Length: 154
Image (cartoon, rainbow, N blue to C red; front, side):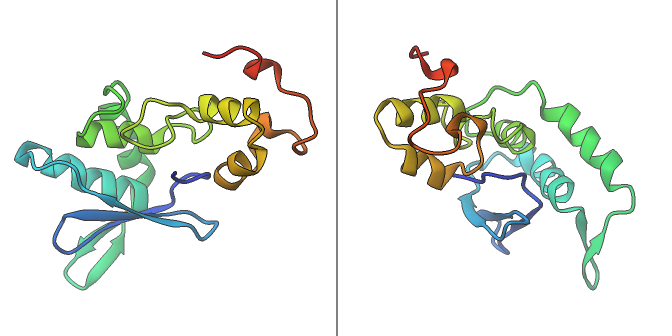
């Protein structure tokens, strides 16, 4: 489904056709690069650098000294991009959203909250917990009552 925690690194395949994202909890996901728009090449590179804090140098990856400032600049570029579209801006917006509040993956519109509530209404607590451990809607376990936020379908 996607990362449950914030993304800490992103690295592109040498052929540019995929990106792997990593989190501090040891999870990695391989995503296809779903754009062939040449005008997005710079934004894709900016996104990879903003997430990883590294830039490709002559001897390999090197840390970016003004990483937070560059990350803030990229976030501003993508913060109003439409979600769920096969564009670099849409992917960038999704990457920098709160993982509890964003859609379950870059090309979906179903939010994490909607997914969890649907799973809880269908008695699938274990499934929701597997994908989103620690989410506040999951409470302490499957015996907890249905959260108020899940009482009605959205």
